Amino acid sequence: MDKAELEADRAIDPGQLDVEAVRQAEIYCKWAERAVIAAARTETVEFELDLLESQLQGQARSQPIKENCKAPTEASIKAWVAGHPKMIEARKAVMDARLEEGLLKTAEKSLYVKKQMLELLGQLHGQQYFAGPGVPRNLMEAWTAHRKGVSEGANDKLRDGIRKRAKQGE
Image (cartoon, rainbow, N blue to C red; front, top):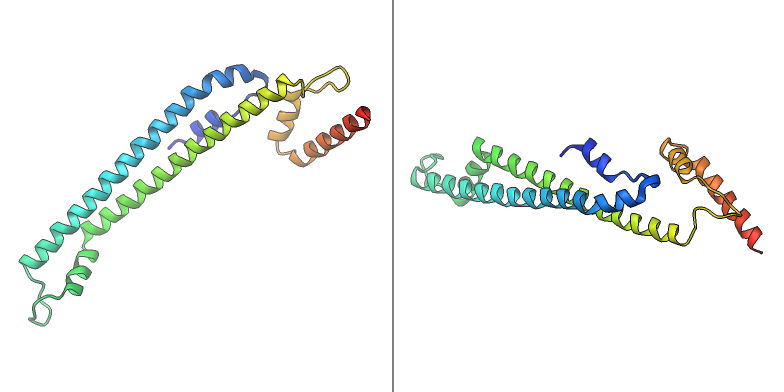
């Protein structure tokens, strides 16, 4: 998964909400498709792990492991299978596949949240929340300030603006 690509797809340009809204379906589908492919890959790798485990158990039973010249026990067979290098490699492949699947599912969910944010911003614009004759506001400036890490200062400005609007409404 390319984190830079995800960050670019999750970003919202407040100055172009119409373009962002139009692009959202395409972007969401791209990441949802990747999540489905990752889930299928996880299932395939898990199936291969189960198959390998069965093969190794069969091999251990057909060619008994010599443990003090006794017949192998279930515990010794399980231990031999679990420690087999192919089994360890297969388990690592399953863990990697699950990680990729989880990351892509999270990416898909984050794009769903982006859709909700775009809807909310559209509603706020429709209600003329961001601009009006009494309280002009530059959304691009506020967003840029927030993205630059001045979120605390930006929040103070927003709070002051809300208080001013509340006083003007009284």
